[in-house]
Length: 407
Image 1 (cartoon, helix red, strand yellow):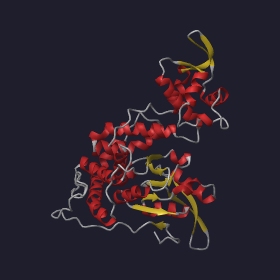
Image 2 (cartoon, helix red, strand yellow):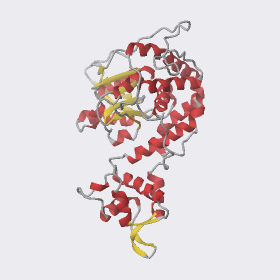
Image 3 (cartoon, one colour):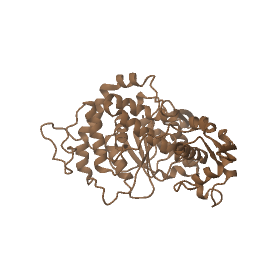
Image 4 (spheres, one colour):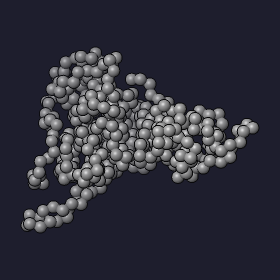
C-alpha cells in the first residue's frame, strides 16, 4: 500500500525497540523481591506465559483483584485476534486524573500484538491505520468520543462496528485520475480506549471495563522505568508471539461451537476469546476467570447510565434476594430503594426521592405492574417476585458470584 497522504495521528512515543535475548545472561534480580519478573526467563510453557504477563500488570498497577488476569489474557489474545468472530475492546477508565490509566496503556503496549498508541486520531486515520497495519490500537484521551460533532460521530460509527470481524466502512477515495471511487476499509482489530469517566453506551457495550483508581498510601507498586521495563518485557512478548504462532489451530478448534451460558449474549461474545485462550494457556485459571467475568458483567449492567430501568431492575433483584418473601408493598420497596446510598433514587424525581408513580413508569416497559398484595393482615399496592422473573432473565446477567478476595 502506498504511503498515507495524511499525518498518522500523534504517536505517544516511538515503537518498542527489539532487544536481543541472550539466554546465558539473565537480567538482574527483581527489585521487588517477588517471583522474579526481572529475572524471569519466559518460555512457551502455557501457564508460565499467563503468569508472567499477569505479574507484570500486578507489579506496576494498583487495580482490583482479578483485573491483572484479564489484562494478561487479553494481551495474549491480541496475537491471535483474527481467529475470533469478535474481539472485546478494553475500556481503561478512572473517575479523575492520576489513577494509572497511562501506565496501564504503556504496559499493554509492551505485550500486545503490533501496538499503536495515539491521541487525536481522525476517522480517516483510524480506518486506514487498521487496514494497513492491523494494529492493537490504543486510543489515549478518548474523552472526545463522547462529543456530538461530526468527527466524534464518525469515530463512534467505526468503533461500534470494529469489534466484529468482517465489518467494513465504505469511503470515497481518489482514483489517481481526478475522480473518486468507492472502497471498503477494514475496521476489525483489538482496541483499547483510555479515558476519564465513561464511554458512550454503545461503545461501552463492546468493552470489558478496567476501572483504575488512585493509589492509596498503603499500596506499593514498582517504579516504572521505560528502558528497563522494555528489556524485561521483551522475552515475555516474544513468548506470546511464539505461543500464538504454534497454537492457532487449537484456538480455532476450541472456539468453534463454544458458548458462555452464564453470561448474556453480547457479554458472552466479548468474553469468549479470553476463555478460549485461558483454556489452552492456563486451564487451572478458568474457574477464577468465570468469577471475574460474572463480577465485571454484573457491575457493567448495574452501571448502564443510559438506562435507568436496568439499574432499577438490578436494585430490585438485590432487595428480593435479601428478602425472605417473594412479595413487597410499594412503600416498603421505595424505602429500600431510596436508602441505597450509591443509587440515584434519592433524588430521582426532580431532586426528591423516587415515588410510586415514577417506580411504576420505570417498570412498565419490562411488563411489571403493581397489584394488590396481602402481607399478613395488610393489603396494599405492591410487587411480586414472580412478576420480575422474566425481566431479570432477559435484561440482567446472572447474579454476581462471591466477590473476589484481595490480591
